[in-house]
Every structure is written in structure tokens, then in C-alpha cells.
Length: 62
Image (cartoon, rainbow, N blue to C red; front, side, top):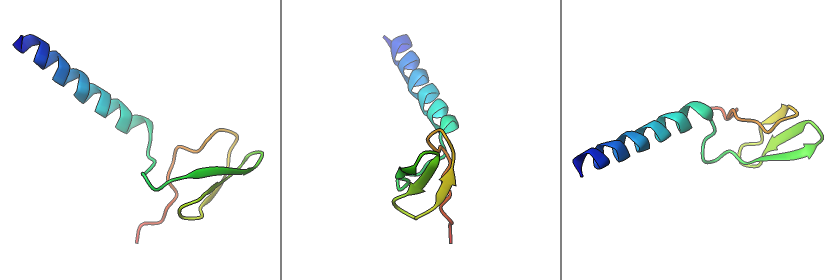
């Protein structure tokens, strides 16, 4: 039983590490496509030209 709990804990920690490495978006980022290849964040108003959905938060931190 303890081995199962340790494996479960390691699995959860591995998932959290993987999730952190694959995205830099914050919860506030809400990218919307305004035109083909154009994206605008509904939260902060940042704009980006990209064919794929953005994975970077361009929000300025004050």
C-alpha cells in the first residue's frame, strides 16, 4: 500500500512539473482570434500575430 501512495504522489508531481513547463499562460489570459493569424487577449488587450494559439502571456506586470 505505501508503494502505491508513493507512486501516486510521484505521478501527481510529474504532471504538475510537465504542466508548468508546457504553458506560461496565466489564468487571466483569454486569447481570441480577431482575424486569420491575429490574436487578442480579452483580459489585458495584448495582441499577437501567430497562426497557432498563443502560449505566452504578454501581460505587463507592474
